[in-house]
Image (cartoon, rainbow, N blue to C red; front, side, top):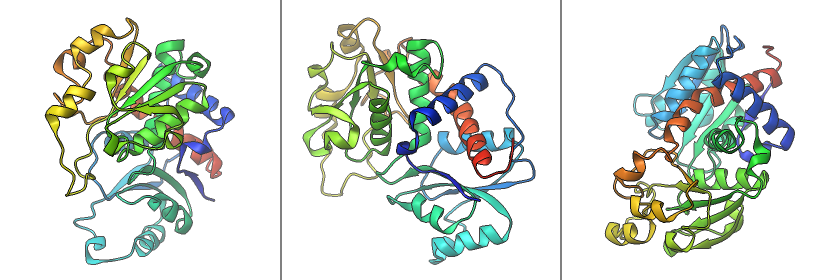
Length: 310
């Protein structure tokens, strides 16, 4: 039986509450189930990844499973084998799940259509990155409400998502999930990298961080996605820093309890300076700590949905 996590729209209030509660238990030392005992899960990563790939690998290991990493450069995909045929090979070899990352929007949906088992979207082009969104919303719930499932504490929380919105799958997932729990999201981006507010779940988009500096509770900072920026687009880093970098001086002018998140990797000295990166208001350490528990919780829920038992 199949079970998928492809986008944040799958997280209704009930499912979000269950996952958040389980993340909180795991963060506080609860043991993971062994629901993947004797099962193989493929990491089909067609784009580079460090944090996401490592956290899924660790989560699969904690759940008793075995990870099969598929490197596109050394697999038959480089010989123009179709994704569908790769999935047929995985199924024939007894693979139970696929965690997929790809540069094309909708790839995870294709995998779910042709693979009978667990499928998780670990990032599809500029589409979505739902486990990153779940992780970071749990971090904010913990920060504001004391628990990873205290989503009511995010009601009315003002969040600025700052940077390259147009090329960011994380922005689309985080913004919509935050909006679904009652947060007020605003986008901040250069006009050429802006996005329809509806795609972010945002109330609006502005083109300078100073416009929202003293109005928001959370700065969710994004890197410039150089790998997705068009060859004809000129990136003026000096101008970008002047209008969009959250520096130590700017953070001093923000609300005293405002916090900072970043999905990584950070372009140090571009969207954030060293002062902010070393500030106790920077929550990247919590984000890293929540990475594995979030993926464990997601995989447990999908295993139960697939009828594998816990």
